[in-house]
Amino acid sequence: MKKVLFTLAFALLLGFSSFAQRFAYVDSQYILNHVPDYISSQKEIKALSDQWQKEVDARFQELDRMYKAYQADQVLMTPDMKKRRESDIIEKEKAAKDFQRAKFGPDGELAQRSNTLVKPIQDRIAKAIQAFAESDGDDMIFDKNSEVIMLYANPRYDKSDEIIKRLGLKPGVLAK
Image 1 (cartoon, helix red, strand yellow):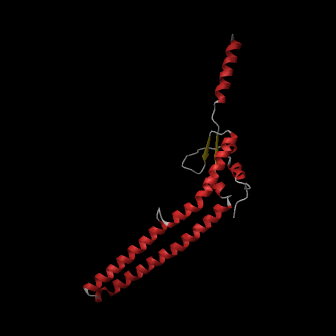
Image 2 (cartoon, one colour):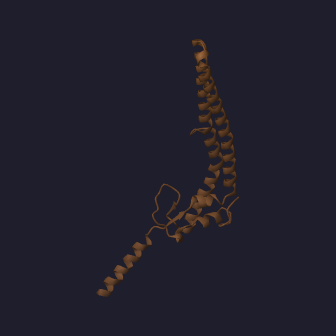
Image 3 (cartoon, rainbow, N blue to C red):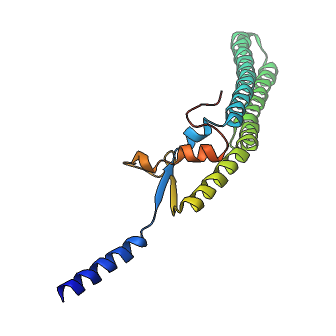
């Protein structure tokens, strides 16, 4: 009787363990750093950002110069001249802020350009991850760099190099 109960308990234990979910994780930043298209898109985005930041800085420097000139000349101006200069400064400031928002705002040109360049790369990586998970039998794959907090991750579950291989790239060789 004990053998039957032991065999039955062992069979149940094996049955339950076969329903265990398989987990893995990837490091998306590590993967992205291996994709040459991503590296070149980041360089392009940085160049645009630097160029537009210089334009924003120049506009605010001009605004600062106008304000200092207004302060220096204020005692010699008539009330109409003061209003005109103040209006010019306010208009210039609004234009500078609008330009800054148009380039760097959440819906600005930089965000749109970044999305245009990076989204196809992210989609390619997501498809490679999905294909890997399906072929490897994984139920869930987490991103080490996402909002999910991983207090510990065993490196044997890190599948980043396999994803890089699926993308046709060489793991360990960073793109330049």
